[in-house]
Length: 215
Image 1: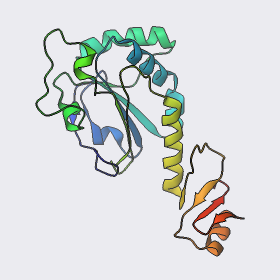
Image 2 (image 1 turned 180 degrees about the horizontal axis):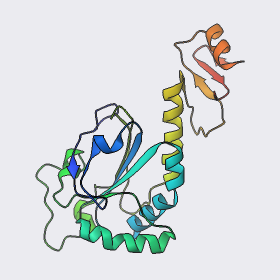
Image 3 (image 1 turned 45 degrees about the horizontal axis):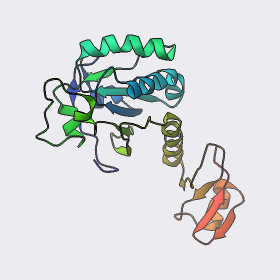
């Protein structure tokens, strides 16, 4: 999957019933984050982090869907551990991808991949990817993590803020941007147009002009 590709649609069973991705996303944003196996330590902390951040995702009109290559029955039992660890319920849907349909559809596993009997998380280690999908069902971000490194969901929230800001205004965000910091003015605007829209510019180079974050 590449940036700006249409996110492949699918219908799957989940802890919230049968869902079709594009219908479920609706007119908002979505974060699809995948896991190689239930009842694994790093993934449990990650699902807990997402559960704790539920209000932040809601503020951003963003839904969250987990994908794990196990059954809904296993997911339901695992959610009890997640809630116990996080101190809040994991109310977002977790997809049953025991068939590997979604993992293969999103290029996380090769087409010929299968899950052997007695498998461990290492058998599906590449299924540790985050996708941010916009209201037009386009993929705007992909991040793939190794087994030993927990995902930084503060970064995913930051990326959502940046994507939504740059969808609203002709700006980009510089390195290490966080909400409230200066933004880069798009080259589609000349200086006069940019100042009329954003106020005074901090012109570093003709091609690098900074302005206050627009409201």
